[in-house]
Image 1 (cartoon, rainbow, N blue to C red):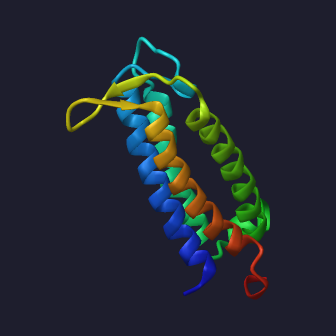
Image 2: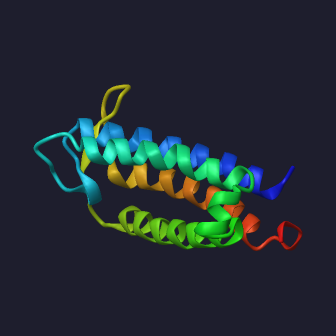
Length: 141
């Protein structure tokens, strides 16, 4: 399978999981970076959904208009890899905090930010490897 097609699928899975997690947190009054918020972050929900759809669309195959006027697909994947690595770093910091907040779990009980961060870190690391592999793959050049 083409490394960019695999990267697009990995990013789609990563994006959907993050979007569902973010949506769940927003519905429980938790905003960006874990802070409390009074109103739902509709802008973040919609913007996140745009990224979940647009980024895999740009990765899966060459888009002449995008590569001519904006970035090559490889450069786009490289920038995306750097941004995902930054995301992984921030998620790792949440996972390593001595104390974290919690939200009600969908199945009952509570779900700590630490547990959520560990799950998101594993998902991010997997997608990061596949997007990075496509970005620096010699055959994709």
